[in-house]
Length: 279
Ligand code: ZN
Image 1 (tube, rainbow, N blue to C red):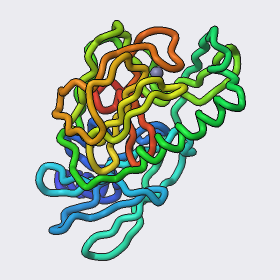
Image 2 (image 1 turned 180 degrees about the horizontal axis):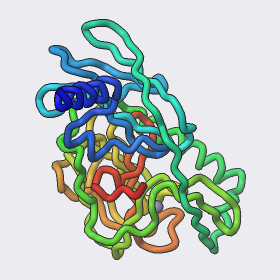
Image 3 (image 1 turned 60 degrees about the horizontal axis):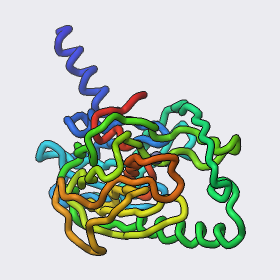
């Protein structure tokens, strides 16, 4: 009797929670600003589609049975109730989920090149153009399913600057840290964390030499400050394939690997995907 009551309560909890239960879900579900929400869409014969903040969202089948949505939550999202729009054979519905707060630390950096803190008009124009180009790349939603969601580290080395740090350059606050840094020497090969297609190549004011890799369905990696690029636009890169070499181009105080991960055009903490998330 008691056992069946407990079972009933457990089932009740499952049906009331939108978050999913499988291995990938447990690993990736960190619904904070700059994190990821994994939501259970239930079983269905046809693939459901989902949108968050009017952008298409990664949907995969977990454990061969249930569909899950893997939602990137931008750093600027306020904690509280959020909504996912879902469309499947039954029609359209809204799935609610909750984002909890997270406090990110501050980081103070001194730069000798003051243009990298307060750029002049010509540089501002360039920065604006480059930002638009990169934003368009992050908004690409290609149909392929990512080869793996537990991503490989692009380089083997200690983590240095964490994602989300509030940054002050020469005492002035600028955008928070959009990716994860690894402390590795210049020339270290940068490897694809999953199968990908080269989406964009650039040599940018802030990011320096940069590679965008499309893993499918809006999951996109960006590697920057590179000393060399070893791929061409549109190239298919296998998991572990070398895309470039670590450097210090653009706004960098020294050689390191900076890796961004984006989902549904939201930059999220790459540490989540390598099992190194810190709440
Ligand atoms: Zn960085």
